[in-house]
Image (tube, rainbow, N blue to C red; front, side):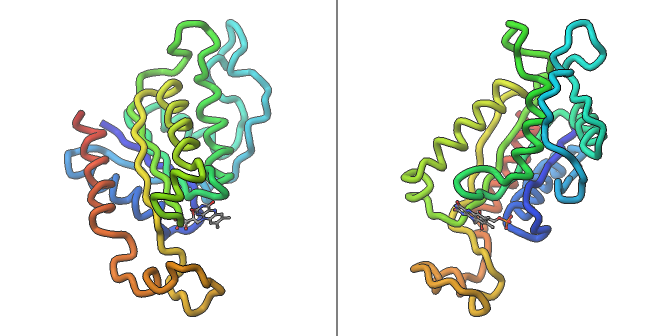
Length: 214
Ligand SMILES: Cc1cc2nc3c(=O)[nH]c(=O)nc-3n(C[C@H](O)[C@H](O)[C@H](O)COP(=O)(O)O)c2cc1C
């Protein structure tokens, strides 16, 4: 089994990357071959809406034709069994880099052929890992949960079953004294010893195991 994890945060040692590395650790512990990719290392464009991936009787059907640094990644994804996307939440949604990537990844497989499966090469197993500053209550109140559940639904329909894992209440700065931040959780976050609670790291590890074993 091959698992590929794609990170949509520029912070190489940030919350999202840490959670994805835990997923990878879990997957490796049960024998998976794994790869980690940071989208910020790749130079790529948004979907240009050319519809070549929907062209009848063409080689491009079911494939994105835009020729840039995403092309080899999209090929490696097709060779994988498990796709894990990780993103920080920016203004209640996935990061812009992740949205650009998912337009290219998902639209090529979107079902316009009435089969309810579309032109995807196989049924992948997938997961969406999202990290955000807000706490669990605000996550629900502000509709972030609805947005992510909806997006996980799109991934399920387009790629294959998708599990959503969220990390809320994240630590944003290594040293809170250096930044303008007067929110009520400042004290707790600046003094937190485990930047990501062990329980959340364990959930990410377990997700990696589950994605490979189930
Ligand atoms: C541009 C920007 C917008 C953000 N918007 C939100 C938001 O709407 N809700 C939230 O809870 N956190 C928001 N955050 C905080 C990040 O989602 C959070 O700190 C996340 O864990 C960062 O992940 P990273 O360390 O992998 O980059 C925002 C951060 C930035 C830089």
